[in-house]
Length: 303
Image (cartoon, rainbow, N blue to C red):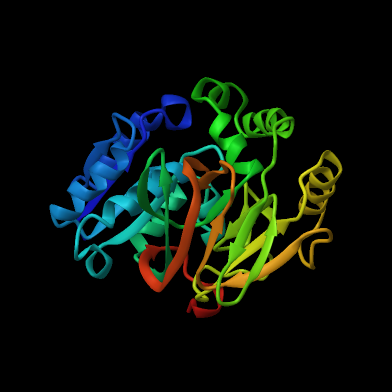
């Protein structure tokens, strides 16, 4: 199979170049495309899809995966032809954890070469980026309100210095700001709150199980809605996420929908897969089983 590896040179403390050379030695026919600028992963993935590669590997964190799937969307036939591989080199690696992809790169590379394929739901959202409408795909998680504002405030130097703690730092800073009401409307749901978390799998923000019943191939999006953002409510929610693996969360609404909109009378930021992208209003939808991903084979199907 023909493989193109799209890698973030800043991943793993700048050691991604070393790993890229190692992978090139293991698979000499593989092409290497570094992301040299903002949205470079998206441009490289679109280019690789047009060049006819069968497997396009996102080597980086969730942000790199996010860029690659959006690049694949620029090639008209990529959904039917191209398979996505993941080498987790980021801070959180939520998507890799969700699929059970090993965090050791040699083992993750073995998953790609094994070639076992899963069909996952492909998510998309129409939203506002500045004064203009925009549309992007995402794969694992989204949020509007506090978590998006914290993501918006994270700088690369802070993230490099503190890792995942950078998000906790900026979340504490964002708590002091105003928290507008967000309206959630769709055929299956109609409610409101000040914080909305959206998941296409169990994990959110690393290994926190925010959506225990969620699956990324069941044709549904799962939502958590916090009615009011306060120190007490956020601390209580955080404690529940840290301490529980199953069961309902208290103090929040747990919902499921196939498509819905988020809107607010005031500015509310939006994040997708841990990347700040714009603001509300936003319309979410999904296409079942439209993303072809190389993942570990389920235990029950192994011979």
